[in-house]
Length: 219
Image (cartoon, rainbow, N blue to C red; front, side, top):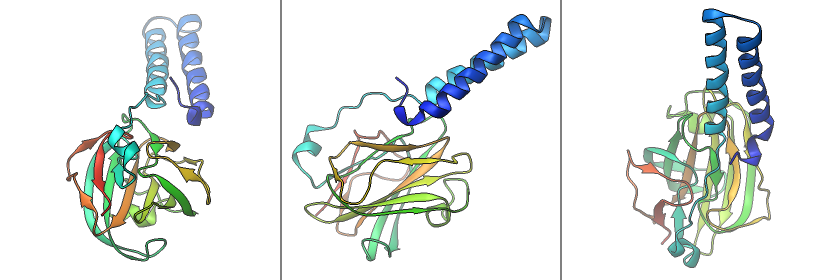
């Protein structure tokens, strides 16, 4: 199933792929016919793969315990570092960073249950998403959620290929852990910033699944 967040791009890309295939079949012959048909097929297959929205099973433990933190996106954990968070937590904290390659599912989910108290969109650069400075310098959406236990901030961050962020949340919204909140298009990064007291189960190098992998627990 194609995510609704990607209908605009997906239909255009599928249409472009069909045009390439049509040119290959009806306009060109020989090598060029094969080349255009292959390029069109690759475009369509990549589009269907990138904008896929597979169903996910939220762990019952996370639904029953609102101190649980789930991965907000598919990808690889590239950093777990101390930071000074000045926008929402306004304190020293721990940042968990997930890198999404173009082949990962790019639908994003809320990592915690709570009320959105803070939202800020920031235009910026397009450094590669695994670059340490991308967390501060790249275009991003910052979402601050107050849970029953503590404040949590998470960021949708564009990369060198990602040039559009879709974010449905606004201040005052009530979020349930694992709920879909948007997507980032064509490779990107998500940061989750939690209090230092948080018990973190994940480690750098782990592959995580959005809405299913438990990253830690608020204390």
